[in-house]
Image (cartoon, rainbow, N blue to C red; front, side):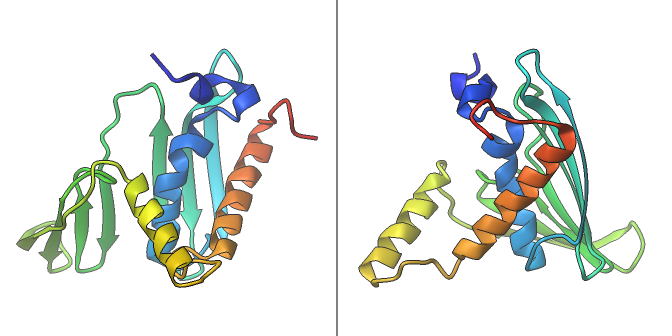
Length: 173
């Protein structure tokens, strides 16, 4: 059963603010900034929150990203980063301990694959807690990993999509 906060508009429910923030933040981190163009769409639940949302981003570099999110579909948690010489595959985005670098010569034929294993906690919040503890210990009021302005910009991005969809929470003016 869904947690109440996920489906309740009074608790800012919906997939974008709860789950979508992670792939959105990942893509913005990988691209080094916020997209210059955004297209998105959603399907609302019976309670009025976004239950399935898709986002398409274009970055100033010309790179593009597509993200599909849902709190009620059994979707794969795979992330791909495609380039002209290959792609990187994250089979268990957020939770996995390995990813693959696949090299090709501009065709669809893979010439080599390198598996990379990186220890990963099953609970991704651990990294956030560790970073906060580190910053406090160093007397910092802001992380250099995800600066405050980046968090604000990503929230503005998500708020812009919600506005486009007409998704307002009961407590918003």
